[in-house]
Length: 524
Image (tube, rainbow, N blue to C red; front, side, top):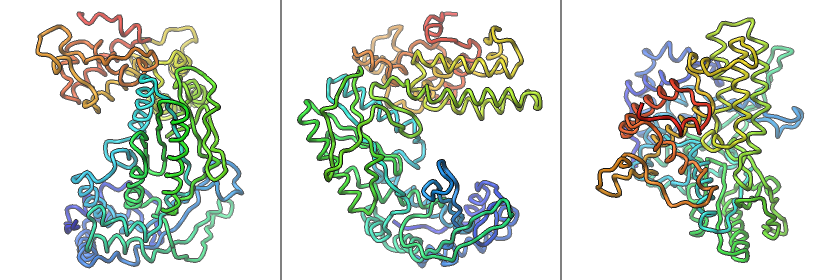
């Protein structure tokens, strides 16, 4: 591939797209200053970037970064409980964005990124990765296969990338010549120093500059994309009956088998292949935090299935956290809902505390930021569960607090007036958005046969007799779509209008349960 030159128009557009912040790298130039001076520096910056592209040399002064440790959780005295945030020079981010645009265009145009990779990719999210995982598990259960997943934990994956190995992989994706030299120059001869902030003394302490020997810069524009290229060949190490689900460094695999002996053999062989791949690529597998779950329709004892690697047994779990959602071995979502409730209760308490001091408009903003953002995450997976009523009760509670009404007063009119969807309605709306985004997963009846019937604008139901599969996102999406009024279904091909009409319909009716939605008279 060839990195084509940039223009002042593109540079101005990139500068404009940067988030306005007061933070800065070692050069002490913030985005606020950069945006103010954009008209004056765009032309010389264009010349510098084009020179880097033509020579294949990344400017040395843009390779210096400041590392700020940010506390995650646990003891503050333990360095492992901190996340390193990389503060880069803003001119570096502009140049990286230019290269990123050209690199992603090349990779997408030629379909070079593995389709099992969902991280840092346009139009893909954690929701897509979780759907793929659960959909594959439900399909395996329906086909009466033994199915399990291994959730791998990598220690400091981004910081462990071996530069020589990454550069060696670039030609496999058509990145050669000056493009390869420029990316190699970007990785080579980088320096960093650590900044510690003292809030009590209102001062900063710095370490000495240290050369970076491995890893991609966290907080950079190019870093995540380079990491995707680094692990892109991981699925090649797996057999045909193993499905990987990758989200950047979050690696999980789904394994199926006809019987226990074959399943056990495949599990151990696959684990060995992946562990060997990690070792070859200088990535550290944290075996104590790596988990294996065997899925089933009911809670059954599957203790006979074990994974061992180098005389170490891999922990077997009945639930785990995957991309922010808690998944258990029967896909009941009980654990996720139970762990979500305390967060939502805290939001209710915060709302009650702040209500006397802020306006109604601000209360609504706080609701969306601190309650709905938590409630909505992964709702397409657990919104059908009977346990979701506990979440719905808290949603009604926070609305009563916002509007100052009594505990037993109805909230239905509040939902309509505030244009906030009740949880069951929001679940329906989330499935509708999923359908609009993933049209290729669904088939209209009229696409299967030419007969004009009342059902021709409905989705075709797959043959699924297993109740567990009928609660999955795919089946529930079909069921919800088929119950929509005809005027909404007719706009299915126009995603924007389809979603807008569905949202207005749900806002007007404010359904309190799925049964209420199913029983709605669409002939009105």
